[in-house]
Length: 466
Ligand code: SF4
Image (cartoon, rainbow, N blue to C red; front, side, top):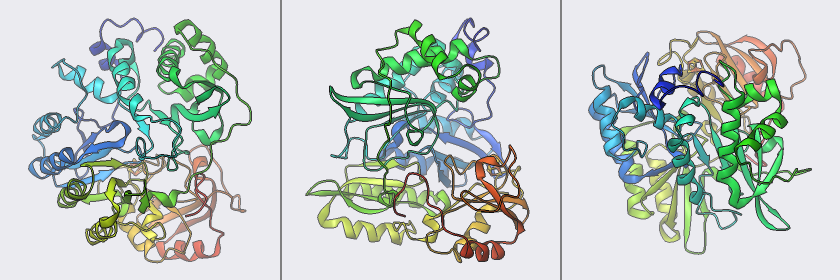
């Protein structure tokens, strides 16, 4: 990338040089259940009007099945063959595409794929935050799209800006992350490469230098990346983080203070669900569809609730759910009941709030089991406080974070159980290392439920109480 991409002649050439099977707004990829389109939502922000448009397009051009992702995006599944362009056009018409003037589909595709920016779902709403990061989102996305060289970035290259809100995903790895903190001279951003705030920072900058820092680090990444190195972790593994910072000096890196002993305060992930006060007048309400799937009618209803009782916006969360902000306190309980009537989960203790599963064999040819159906069966017998992840293969699409327990499919209805912090150490190889240690092999769902009852529950890393 440091040679070929750097000297490619146009953004379209760079985009063409990137090999990706990632779905996007333009790049509708084939799946077992039809075409798959990913609607990127920078910062997770979704207007209710846009949610209605997605629901309508999903019915007009696809099966009507929608899913929320662990990067706070939304996907349309089951797109009918021949309807791909019409779906994309409907979504762009709703303002869900990148803000570019170019009409060429290659440019639209590349610009769309650069918008992997995660904020707290409470960004701009949480009085406890140190920095309102919503003000940074648009300039960052514009910078990514305006610099032709950045079209060489992988569609998976992702940024996190944490404003210090009381609710944030702190254990999802990002190529570059910034986290607000207080210093003697005012607010600053801690930052790190190829990791997450839970890992600790490599430096800090003034809060006003966030955009300049990201720009310099992206140039440094592209300078140092060898062919085939698409993520910051590849470059850090080869050169080290210090080399990235030194290279960034050639690209107007702002002054950096080295940091020691900074730890981002933990968050309570139970705050992602239910009613929670924003101020004396309004609350936000968090909910999630079972196993991240909802139909078009439910999305329409969710959007209508946001328009009727909230501020007409939704925030998609990295826990595959949604938040309705600015709900009047006088109607918050009624709205909560409406969400539950729709089949949405709003209680962190609910078994399906502690169970995640990838698409599984119903929609993914790589899957060795029907993980969604098996997850529903497991949830019916899931012990209290246990969090579990079912994965159809080693790619772990459903979990960006380190799940306490993972059931990895080995055959239809059969799983190996992995855990972090468990005592048995039967297997630990490169493919399964992110899942922890192998606890038991070839379990049925019923046997897995029994075994999970006997093991000590492990908590997700960024939570203090779920
Ligand atoms: S984890 Fe594997 S089986 Fe599951 S959706 Fe991803 S690629 Fe398919």
